[in-house]
Length: 172
Length: 206
Image (cartoon, rainbow over all chains, first blue to last red; front, side, top):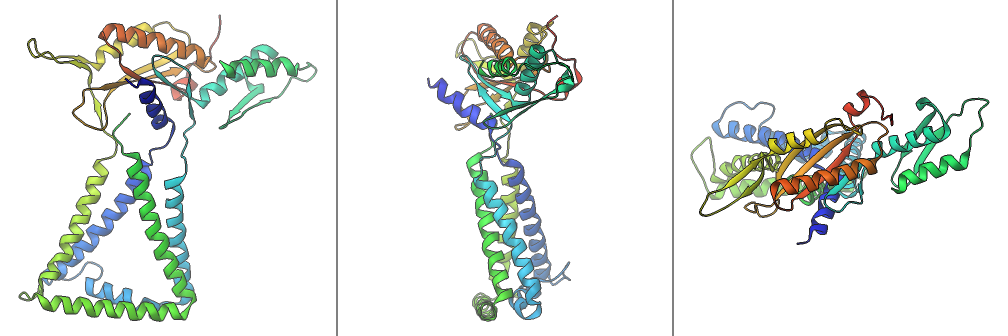
């Protein structure tokens, strides 16, 4: 039945961004531009006054833009637009990983927030080294877990035991 | 689990990004090089001339001027409609039916999601590792007529609870649900740590 394939597809969709937000924002801007230009052209057809500028004037302005604007302004506007375009391109191709990862499970596809893993590691470290919650902070990134400990002055810290506790928690 | 077409979203972003990049580079180039500026002016004058000739080919009474002039707002409004359709295609796919069994003789039986939701809540009552839960149902993607449902269970873990413990708990829940429904279901379990996690007390073993 391909349950494993279904699970991996579901997990991939859950752990990566769908880019729906960015896509919707771009579509809204496009919609605004289409509606504005559409209104302008309909008004021009009916012989009414334009809202901002009639299509004829817009076309003429676009054609003569190199003559009428300063070269510096043109370059600046061009660079800004190009950077925006580049951002969209990068967003389209980058992974877009959310802070979640999959866990081993048989009957269901399980996805955990990294935050939950971090809290569990912190707790194990606290218990092993008998520390207070404020003294341990764990950060989880894509391939690493970083535990920052502020030991109580005067009390020795057993590094090995602590590292082992953290690793055990992660492995499960 | 929703119906968002992710590949299409990324393609749309890439296409728009490419167009903006090209337009921006062209404009920046025009600002820096006089030759590009002259090309721009000549190309646009040619285009405008071409448009005027086109308008002359299918005349219509004033102030419309030409059939081609009608085409411009038509195309723009089509573009607007396409954008609206694009916006509506994001997400979706949620149902209130957790499972449906069709029987040509006896009729259809549908299980509502609230039944499973209260069953899961009851099962998690008093559990120390989980603060809250929610269950939702989603229709299958692809061919919309397929009755393959998916369930999505979100468990809010207590701060410090071991993910392994919660995952084992989730598997037990899924086994229970499959026993209730009588058949295997595709289930996605999300173990989350959100606002409820932060506000609730930390996990204590005692």
